[in-house]
Length: 134
Image (cartoon, rainbow, N blue to C red; front, side, top):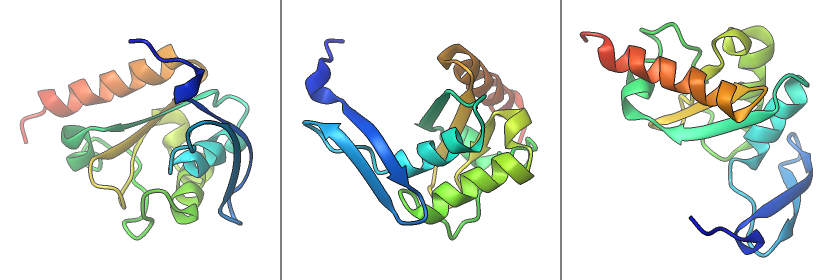
């Protein structure tokens, strides 16, 4: 409720393939910074990347027709970043705006041109997952 600049890292540059992130601030950047960066690089339409843990959505992503990264792409690795970018460029992530992280149990990504757009896509898919009779 009372965050200050002390709790933020500003990512200034990155190299996904080289597994490097340069940042400023008192805290280190998230381990998922590369994944976010890869999605920002994928398209200028991606202005917000949300990463949440959503067990219901993650477990049923395939049944819902959502893209899923390869299970061998671990959380916080260049492999995950490249997988997220691949799903955006070659899969349906650009249109679904929500994807599950196969190598990160419960991990889900949502993208959009704004926080509202990404959040709305995420909540809509979560509602679908919870409404389905599995």
